[in-house]
Amino acid sequence: MNSSSKLPTLLFLLPLLASCASPAARDTRPKPPALPPAGYQLVWSDEFDVDGPPDPANWIFEHGFERNKEAQFYQPDNAQVKDGLLVIEARRESVPNPRYEPGSDNWRRQAARSTYTSASVLTRGLHQWQYGRFELRARIDVRAGLWPAWWTLGVDGEWPSNGEIDIMEYYQGKVLANVASGTTQRYKAKWHSETKPLAELGGEAWAADFHVWRMDWTRDNIRLYLDDRLMNETKVTDTRNPDGTMPFRQPHYMILNLALGGDNGGPLPESSIPAKFEIDWVRVYQPKR
Image (cartoon, rainbow, N blue to C red; front, side, top):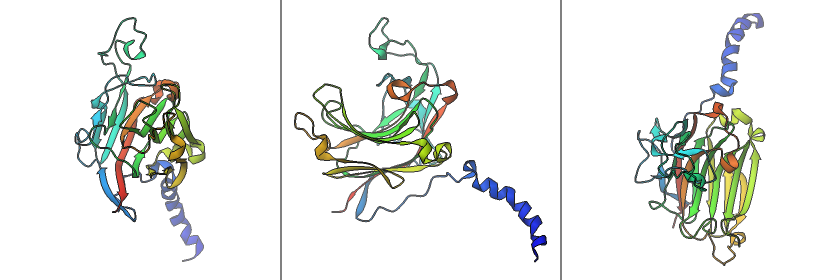
């Protein structure tokens, strides 16, 4: 076939090629389960393969206004499993605040009703782990005012002396990987933080896809990854509390939530709601013995 005869075929294919190259046309469907990493065994996971509420054997819920002066009222209805994903949805919705106290100085009690709702699910009291590889495959919404997170807290002690690990956190145009421990001042944390601007990752096109966040946690180190790129490496000995306790040499439980606004989320435009935090799976591996 000569070159002139190829031209009609090429012209026909160009729109198809362009659509395949566009971010919106990329295949963002969840991938099938992966095999355990070499030297590890799977000790716990949730693949979110049964439609309905999150598995009560794995997750409990937070309720109401919780922390950081965030705008959302947490309730179970905003977390549902559908089509192989756990979907945490933030909505503009008014529900009564049972903690309301007229004239209260406590921000959690000042509003009679909510303006926004969302969900926070956690494994506290059900599952906890000390050391291992933790993985999450998820897609996050990166519009203004949104604050999705996957994080852990130590089971013993008051925050932040119990230890906090933000394996995945996003707000105000940046992805964060943080480790927090205690200081001599109550409720004031010592942070080991690293950030990556969304623009450097690929902006909205990057956020249209699912990504894998990972923590490799040993007795000596905490390493946080995004798509196999090391984001943060913290030595456990650098997180010792002033009283000598070691918050990352104790078991931790995990939290998945979608927060709005608050101390770090920033201004929340109406155009950012509704919003979704979509989780394909979460897994915990530990070394084979």
